[in-house]
Length: 292
Image (cartoon, rainbow, N blue to C red):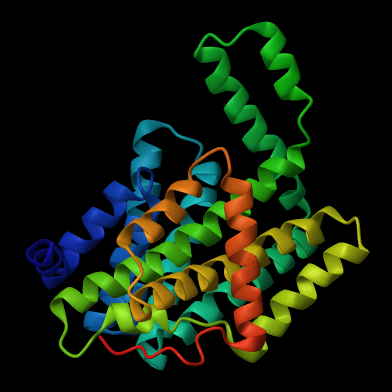
């Protein structure tokens, strides 16, 4: 992996081509490449690579006759967000600060877009229609399609927002880990185990979750779902920190990740998010060292 990342990031055109190729297949990978670019060549280079990748995606969309608005609407947030996360990490040299900035930035951006842009409310309907078309092409029965059409389009917006945030946070971690493979003095494991929302970001996310308990507004519910993801990542950091310091069997950590992709996924998500929230208040890692 070290040789691949070194090869890809040594020439700007290689990184841009890989970013374009992966953005519709594995979105976090494309954003992670921009994080690596920011760390290795600087903020201006990462912003330039993101712009070049967006231009490349647009040109390919034009050539294949795709809907340009829908194509860019799904790729621009990932590419711009990946570059922005990488730039935050480059400036701060702190994974926690970049983590905090990414979460708060995405939530604020979503709030602005869905408040200011009138057409943003139609995103759920557009996504629902696209999925419906795919299901029809796949031979799904009429009864199942009718039940699918009864789903609130707002649920698709929520899934989209959560997917974008998870992709960007995963890209931040992945890109930093990749850079640690080729950079000197970078210790991804140590920094990830110390990952924390901190006072400002933590209070902001808790306020969003509290607002959801007092309001039935769909936008607030969507923002609260995104806030939970922030505490989830901090919960994962606590898990790895305690596993490392207390020498837990590797199977414990693996088992938790398996729960997150099992039918008990919701319980796992809520449990880890609760751990992250409590850690942000009482510091569950206060007596844990982060040395390798």
